[in-house]
Length: 236
Image 1 (cartoon, rainbow, N blue to C red):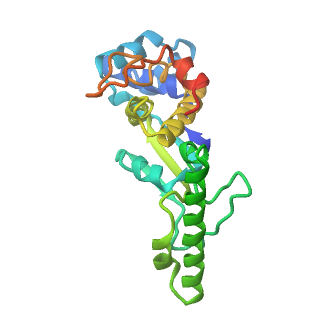
Image 2: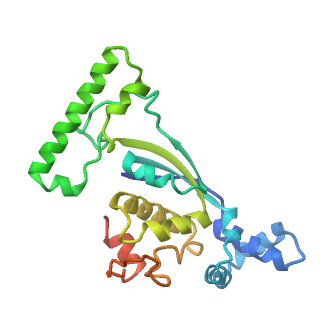
Image 3: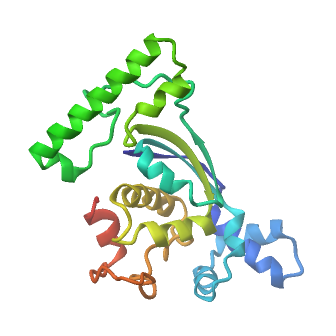
């Protein structure tokens, strides 16, 4: 999986701080922004986060390109409704089986890779599905119908846009150890990119076990020691 930050609101930390200050100021947001460029209030953004006053976080957004995500994971991703998605279409793009490069056609979970017997079963079924797909296309079946036989783990490409408030929610849920491994890795890569561009805004973005308490009814019992432990030590 590869995640790229395509674009983001310029000066996101300063934009959110200025938007918060406008509620209590008699000068314009433009003038406040000029002030925030020089005096960025970490205390203010921290206070907003702790109090749950996150509406000002909605004024900045981030757009990502995601390659090599399975459709299993993309179905989870689009459940985050306060976001915009554009996904590679299997109606118009012909699928092909190519696992000889980094752009593998089907995502194989590590648990299957590590089990030779399971891997043999998996690869056999994938080849069979693609052979059936190709045969149906030869018979004149439209791609939008032939795709029904393809594996659920097919690799896909997406463009995803979320505002900072939704990103905080996304990171809280998907960086939990109980999250499915693939969307967990997606969230990890996205947060690394967000923290590079808005270190104050995303200083406290992450699972509840680090910034509060676990919200799961069944805790994993393995609290992260720190964000660095989560972001840079663990890859799955």
